[in-house]
Image (cartoon, rainbow, N blue to C red; front, top):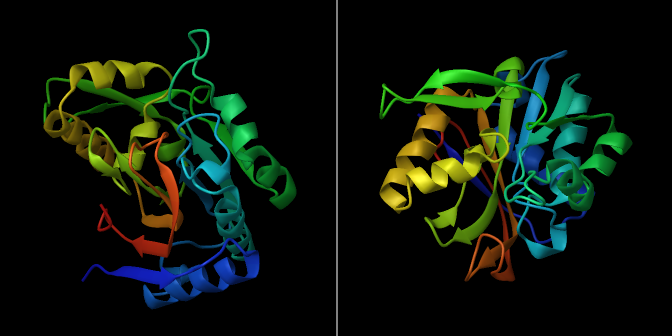
Length: 239
């Protein structure tokens, strides 16, 4: 039976997060159920744009640091990857966003590897809801041995809130995301696209950063508040 684990966590203190995440995974069967030494593990972060952790618009950089440390302790190679939303001068600002978010520094400090989905190539897949349509997803989600999704708890004007499943939209590289938004302007059709991405990809764990969260005009312009939660689940059980 699938489980969802909710841990109270009031700060981004590294020692506290390491203990809370480790305990949560322990209650889901332990790390050995999901990773093994030498696995290439992709941390699919929420990098909606060149935002800092203080905005609660992205997965907090210290949350990503804690995950990296835990996985490295289990002998894994860690990738930190996403494709940023928006465009600056007609180009998705993923490289800049990685720096502003603090992920580039985390990678340098902890021995992880940045995977800019805009530069890593794509893999063609078929949409389950519309088999006549192709969909191109970032290659690292297929190259990794394990993919761990790290969504941010926040509201979203196009879908009430952006959680585990919504975060997989970043697997569509670059400005293709805007094309899908135009194809599916209403929540129901957009939800089909998100479900198709989740089905086509290989997501083994979802661990949500809800220590700080966003309410109101999310996913970027809402108000920051303290939710004090880390939420973990498998197979998209935290939606």
